Length: 130
Image (cartoon, rainbow, N blue to C red):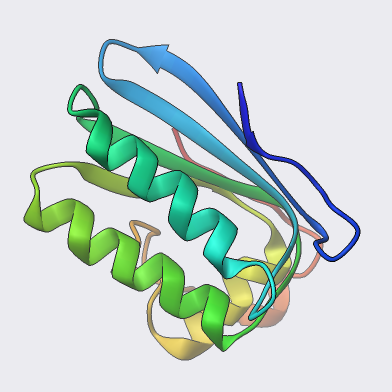
């Protein structure tokens, strides 16, 4: 089920798929930035408010771009989810997003394994953790 679809002003697509009892995967494609972060925030808020969700996985393999607003949205979503007893974690991440999250030091907070010392080795490799 798609919660948000690309619009003329937005270059973000968000898809939600149920993968088990109380668990969903949110696939984020396109650009997560100051112009589109509100769409992801709204999608995650909708899921949290449903009351039957216990785990949210974020699939960022299709993410082409992320800025500080997008990263802040992920961090805040993780913190709020944790406060209400919902596990939010990254399940798949593009090499681009992996490197950005590691450089900023939020990779482990969002459920990624600690960054490798040689971040150049991440270029071209996608992280997929399920």
